[in-house]
Structures are given as C-alpha cells and as structure tokens.
Length: 306
View (cartoon, rainbow, N blue to C red):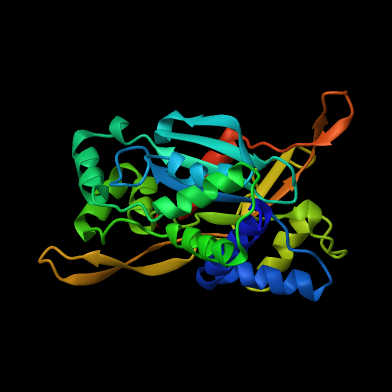
C-alpha cells in the first residue's frame, strides 16, 4: 500500500471522528447526498502551540510532518499579529481533490509571562503519539515506497489517534485565565491536536437547488442549523466563506481542589467555502486556491466563548 492509501484512510477517519462531534456536518452531508450532490471538503484546519510540548514537535511541525510524508506541500504563509498567530496552508502535490490544510500556531512566547507559564506547564508532559515505528513507515511512504496493507491500516489508525489532546487534563482556572488573553490558546489547551474544522467545498457540491453559498446557507438555516450571521467576502470575489456556529462540549478539567470536573466550552464549527477565479500564470482564469487573512481572522472568532 502506498501513501495514497494511507492518506485516504486517515482523512476518512478524521472526517468520521469530527462528524461524531459536530452534528451540523452530518446534517449538511445528509442534505447534500439526499439531493444527489457531492460532499467534498475544501480544507481542514488545525491549531497548535509554538512552544515545547513534551516529546511532540513544537508548533505546526507536529502536524505537517505527518501530511508532508503523505504528499502535501507547504504553500503560503499568513501572519495574524494581533492574535499572535502564524499559519500556512498546504496542498496535495498530485491530487487537488484532497482537502487543503490550514495549520496555525500560537506564538506562545509573545504572550504575557503569566500566560506563557500557564500554557507551558500544561503541555510540558505531552507524549509524541507518532511512534518511532510510525515515523519509519512514513519515511518509506515519503520516498514513494509501499508497505504491507496491515502496516498501512495500523499506521492510519495510529496517526488518527494523534489528532486529539496529547497532554493531560488542564486546570479549569488555567483555561479560564488563558482565555482572557487568547481564546485560541484556551481552545487548544482543551482540544490539542483535534481537527478545528472541516470545510464544505461549495463549488463541487453539485446540488441544483443550491448553486452558490447563499442558497446553501439559506437551506441549512431552514433546516435549523445555526449559522454565522455574515458572509466573509463579497459576491464575485475569489473567496467567500461562512460557517455554522460552533458546537459546545463538556470538557474534562481539573478543579482547584484537584478533583475531576467538566467545563462547557466550544469545540468546532463546520465551514463553507466558495472559490472564484483569478488570472493564472498563462493569463487564463484559474480557481483561487489560497486563503485571505482578514477572513480567516474573523473565522478564528467562531470558537470564542459568549
């Protein structure tokens, strides 16, 4: 089995995990497929801390290491100075039908000393769930070599486990204090490497009744899905986006007295993206594949409490 097989198994696993947590994605899937349409995801987003996180590589490298071995290439850089975030998007080298990746990292050392201390102490003991054996298999796949099917299946399953919270249960007070300075940081303390969101690719939806993002959002609203009030991007521009509201989860925390507790917090939303054309290298129109910083900034806010 080659990297295409392992990547397909991993993406299917992540999509299934995500849909167990974000019911709105299941609603969209049911509605689209019920009308003979196609569910294709435009991109998947991940959040990380750019600081020492135990045995796991720091920042976005922890995630990109997996996907670059499976055929993805780094593209554009995005800076969000107000939020102290750095991000990149990745595209698969040979199969444009694979979702793009949007991997961001919080520049932890740019936060206040008290917040830096809280984050670093929480994540210090994180193990690297990608084992040495997993890394050897990924290296073979990156070289274009094949591995046995049982190895490929076990590898894909092990890689899927990486996309969870690798460090221990955070303290309630720590999450709440970090949230005052960085809602992104609080979210990542609770959810770790979990998928932040998947994104429906409206251009490939193929539902006659929903020719664009406006019609799709209207249909989801009518079905009772809570949606973002505004669209990101104007009609006819190279990227238009919207999303559902984020679902809440009861997250494990440690209480001040050391006991186990629960903290209701946002997890993820389901995003929708419609892409327009831009001039290609030959001057002919080609579909825009990148991201726009201002729009991404607003979408980061969808996991903000209250």
